[in-house]
Image 1 (cartoon, each protein chain N blue to C red):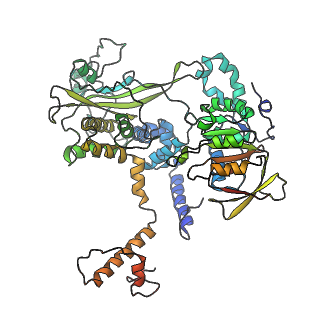
Image 2: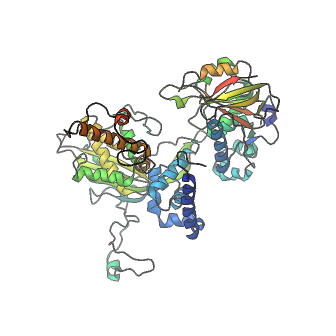
Length: 239
Length: 398
């Protein structure tokens, strides 16, 4: 059984892990946080699932446990399974009808477990509704993501990109500073970001140029901070 | 959480309204009501609610009914919103509506169908005499009546086989129109695909299955006594069933079908003799209605309308019926659009007042005349009119 630290190139900060099994209240709380992040781009919120759910939840499915001894042995580990915060949008939103894909090997390993948990089908990068990226996404991969159509822009993919650090505090040192403007932002707002590579902003601008088509994104740090970037947000690299 | 677009004091008024409900609920002790009680006492409401919301869970439906204070469209809204937050984990195996446990089964078309006429727990034959809780039965059954009727157990010729539907018996007699589509198309789900007419039969059935019960019955009745005339007045019902069935999914590890739930649903078949509309008078046709839980009225209306839709097909009248069934029967859409009228329409109405005033001005300038508007009226016309700033001609504030 993969442990959390084996699967990730960057270790998740303590306390930031998201459990694989979420109860209704946790799902609603995390959904709210993610929706707020997209509604107010530049406002960075910390994702928290709260207390890890009681492992007795595995006792609610005795029929499945009895069917297959392999599943029975796996159950305690399944109940204790947890993921990096960047997986939160998939754990909350992905299901049978939302194909998912990963851009790098580290993400792909965890994606298999996420797919098993959510029943989301694994697919190619250009057909996925949710895309998981641990390492900074390559420009060519970003360009390949499904940006929807003019008639059905909501079918575009959602990128969940792990980053090292996000901050709205000017005193916190980060590799880059972005100025954001657009719907949901009063004038402009500034965020500090460490993680995405130099070409990311330009590559994203190209993918979001053809509104209503475009790709929406969550940048989520290993500490669990979320920056929501809907396709309508314009980013200017100010440092 | 603020409500966008309200004027000063709007948010606090809304919060006060919500507090009123909260206080009423608390005083009535509603938060300590057990959903099991609600299920036992209001089963019919809960079944109707599950069918209109498209979500089968009696406890959740009971909670919605309680929260809505008994208001069914409101409860439907709560359940549909809740349903949209649930992850979709599997698609079930198709349910064979004949592989079911019969809770009730009557066949009005014939006295002795194959299998039983099983009344089940029905009030259909009871006298409608109001009886307050705790009061004695105003029309008690006499001992003589009770002892005179001895129940004869029904002997099923093949007890292990499912009871054959009356329509299947008719089909075996070669009396039915053949409606089987050999291409076996994928079912249309209006929840996931936009509706563009003409639609397939599965789309019509999907829409009607979650239609509002009263709305669908009204549509059926319009066809009988109203000007629409789609449904056949002479329809006879085949099987009317309330059943329990297993829901099976493919097990993710073994790959075998496994039963994960049991649900109740009602289905009904409406049969029409094709002797009046230039069709084959030697044959009959059948329509199908289905609803979650126990809801016979809805399935009877649905079966009759399904039959009508099949018979009209994609001609001009058929398209009208399809539009009625696909676009006007949804409880959330119809109630929601109706209730949206209660939201502020201040700007809308203000602009209508302005246009009416401009029209009146036009009439005055052209000496009364026909009252027809010539060209467009709009802000430019109003500005050129001779009015004091700050008010309009009616003295209404600008």
